[in-house]
Amino acid sequence: MNESCEPRSRVWLEISLEKLRRNLGRIRESVAPCGVIAVLKANAYGLGVARIAEALAGEGVAGFAVAEPREALQLVHLGLPVQILGGMLPEELPATVAAGIIHPVVSVEIARAISAEAVRQGRRVECQVKLDTGMGRLGILARDAVPAIREIAALPNLDCTGLYSHFPVAYRAGEEFTLGQIAAFRGVVDALAAEGIRFSKLHIANSDGINNFPEACRPPFTHVRTGINLHGSFDAEGQRALHLEPVLELKARLIAVRLLPAGTKMGYGLTHTLQRETRVGVVAAGYADGLPLALSNRGCLLVGGELCPVLGRISMDYTSVSLEPVPQAQVGDVVTCLGGAGLRAITVDQWAQLKNTHPYEIICSFGTRVERRYV
Picture (cartoon, rainbow, N blue to C red):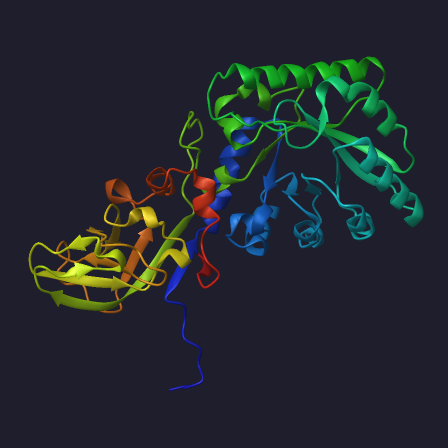
């Protein structure tokens, strides 16, 4: 026995790269001829950007999009376009210009700074202008876009190849606000075209837009952006036009099995009292690993394929469950906290509804001690 061998994690994510690739294929097929930009911000939503990007790179993805420079710099070696979607700080520009990253232009001022750095380095820089059609966060307001973009397009060493925007409520199918955003975007495109300013890349559809607004996935739009749909998840509202597969399962181990008497009070706050003698399992995973506190006394975990109710409040490192549905369970058995198949599957959407949040937060919440295993 090798006593120096490091023990494996008690809690891990199993991420199916095959399902990830299949999801990309289905999205590509549904939006063709538009290209698909994979959004891999926040370490691919916490799933591990290196392996996720490598899996997608050979499957026809048009490029990658991230939120900020450090994320972008991790991906340039794959040889595909890498675009920053958010804002930029002037001190970040030397590295991003040198790396050949597609720069976001959210104002005339940052466009001037990008141009100046490009001139200093003797490089041409591809950039895309972000249009604020109603998100109210970043970008040039649609009403100001034509004169602003006219000035940006004339700056030296900039290749303004694209125009993009973002939907805040595209999960509501047929939402008039979203249709208004599409119309405003197209109006700016037409007005600029009349002045001879044209773009080779136009995109506004996010994952929700792909499912709910097909008009944002066809010409004049050339691309769509998707993040959470790649993982087989959807917003709780809206349609699910794409037939996608969940790519992840959160698993842990039973670290204790105990027979506790009736009247035993369970966990912090003593929020559950056993009504009868009960076989109780302790799972080596808690809210530090991504299990929502909202599962306390309400949710279930899968042990031996059976749904086992959570007893008491979930703690940082452990979760107690009733093993009455699975009396053969033993210490060391694998517990599926999230995932499974068929009617007993525990889904990201279910956790999001219990927590009164959206699936993005669930996927981004898995802790640092959760090992990522790619299958």
